[in-house]
Length: 178
Image (cartoon, rainbow, N blue to C red; front, side, top):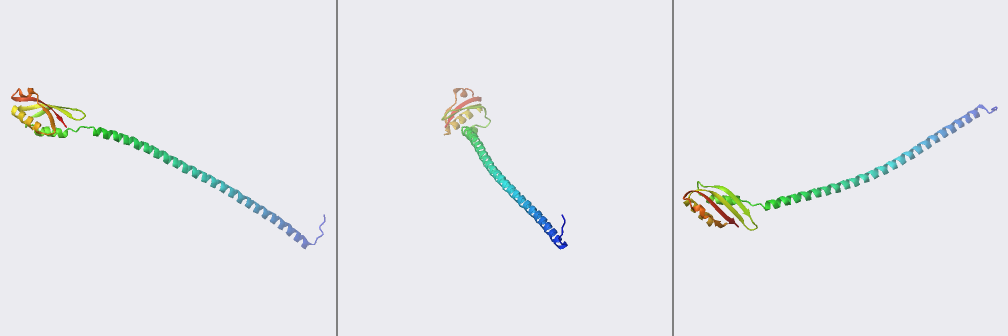
């Protein structure tokens, strides 16, 4: 085919072809950018949904952990409270004999001592049995009077065998406390 067009029109046609190619190229780039934007936008929406679902899952797990932790803590607290109640009931059931022994030792004459001490606890009273050494019968009599004069000691019993020897007496004593 022979082109008989003048060179100016040939240039115009060439420019128009180049313009069409540039326009097609620009349109292709624009479509590529728009589709890339849509892809990025859809990925952002997808990731945002995943992040939100993970946040919800984390919050639920924290609540579960908190509830589990609280439940475990409550069980532990209840177990410790039960142990404390047991310890408290043990200590409440204890018999403190220190004041009784202090009173007995205050009333015990000098150069005298106790060899044996035992007690029996019943629901209302405390039965105490003592044995010991007193140098003379006069000291034993003074000790007996001192013990009997105390209002806290009930049913004081000095067996007759305590009075047989005039010196170096091994005595036995029993009494009850309120």
